[in-house]
Image 1 (cartoon, rainbow, N blue to C red):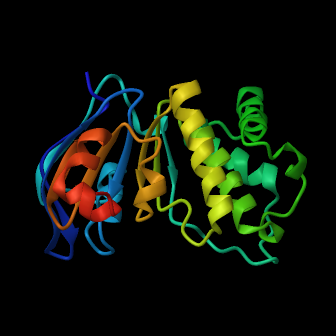
Image 2: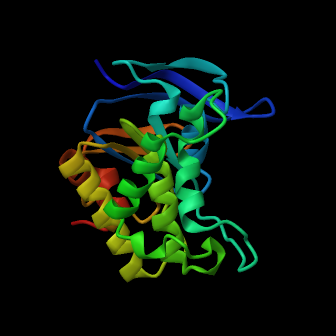
Length: 233
């Protein structure tokens, strides 16, 4: 059973439809890359998948036992000034808030999960650092570790490398590829950086206010729209 199924989905703001006619599925272990021009509805779809926007039409169905507290979310890159007071460990641990429920304190399991995900992202050495004093690439690793603390099965990422230099961005993509291939984490990622972003993807969803393509990556790269968008032959 798929983790997510979208059927004839329409989303928008203030009565105006931004995205319509969307039909796709995400299964456990998939790596779906959502692409399209700026303003084509990619971030709107992510908000819909997070239940932050109610559909104008159609439906989003979560299956295979997926719950909201099993989803980790990494939004578009935030900018934190050097006076941002939180430490790295505190930021990562806050990813467990949704699982804490009515309990007033973090459990040992919560704390172990934070340390484990910091180890996976190779940021243990930053544990006591101030988040606001980190480089952009370091901040994104911290926020990804935080998202992993929320995620049990699914990661949603909205333009996670926007504003990062190419080498840092490539390293981030490699981390996502490892999380998917080695840890089995299902990934749904929005990106405009198609040529690099699709490298690890199993499936592509191409939007332009409606669905232009959904299918396997190799089929996308062979399609007319895929060739045009990626600059392929």
